[in-house]
Image (cartoon, rainbow, N blue to C red; front, side):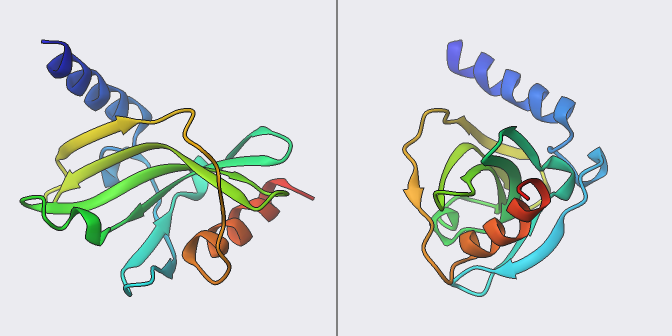
Length: 135
């Protein structure tokens, strides 16, 4: 019962925050491709700065690591970037099926930070969202 409750709660939270569907007010903007040539999008409306040097943003992409899931469509991840230290971490990962239905949701606060490799879509994301908040 506990796991089912958490999945239902995660689905409700996603609907409330507007990321569960394209019609929820999210404006996905293409900004680059990943190393496999898959498009990566971010939501400019989700960019926020919880601290002076840290920015949070939601990204949407199709990861090859999930291709083994039946009817996998895409993933949405909340990324936290330390703009001055060139590091990032993920706070939540949500997987959707090809019709946009919720497949899984994992909240992952407290994940370790890792250095942003140059010439990756993470570096491009940092260059896209950090100047919005950091002078």
